[in-house]
Image (tube, rainbow, N blue to C red; front, side):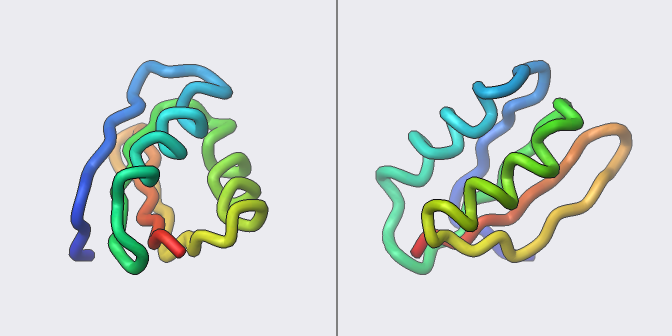
Length: 75
């Protein structure tokens, strides 16, 4: 999937992946896609909740090699 910016939250525990994702999205334009990499298992549930609460769109999430990959489109 194409993306405009990447943020690696590997090794960070809740709530840091969400806090840093919010900061990463702040300087992006509407419609741009952020790729987030996380190792915290709680991020799977948290990213969907974050998207629902903020109006951003979680386009995809997957697991690769023990890491969770998310693609979020800024509203």
